[in-house]
Image 1: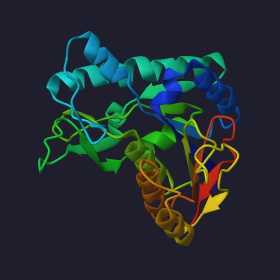
Image 2: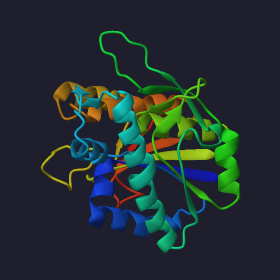
Image 3: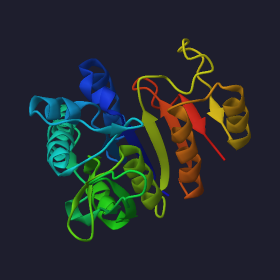
Image 4: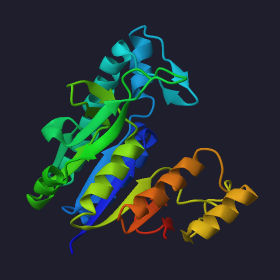
Length: 254
């Protein structure tokens, strides 16, 4: 079974030229059996501020009203996506920038209003594995922005981690898939101030212990919880690391 590496990169990497260059220097060795998914970091917020739009957040997540959606699509599917694609093309990687609505790959629904009206934020319903596989088999590296669409034709702003999980899980139906979350740390650290303290691997029992002891907390908790859900969906492993250790870092296992 062919091995496919799905790599999700955060917006901080796109905004940091040095980190992005280091990542793109490493990606050719995984090509053509690689899919990239990226976030947008603060690009949408910066653009909204320049346009005089109010940036609305709740618990660190963006509320996407109609005007903010336009800015988000411009920032994520435009500037962020094409910046990454251009860097890969420069290195001989035949990359193609896509969003979830291209070829109907990622269908979402508008998040229901409960305590918070998130606006045009999407939760994933399905991922079309056939379309992603078609690109891979033709030697094209898909570079996904986290813009998806609904069956009613609405563009939706979707969490990039969720897009990466969805794409990886769909591809696991026909490939051996490893999902890598690439950020600015070399893994899950025992000591947040020591980059040499990356934990080699974490299973569910260890995760519970690290959570109880307070080693894992805050924004790392949902990442690892989602990692275990992704493994349950058929993905062989989930890795958390930085651009310099794409074969290292911390591996999440059953």
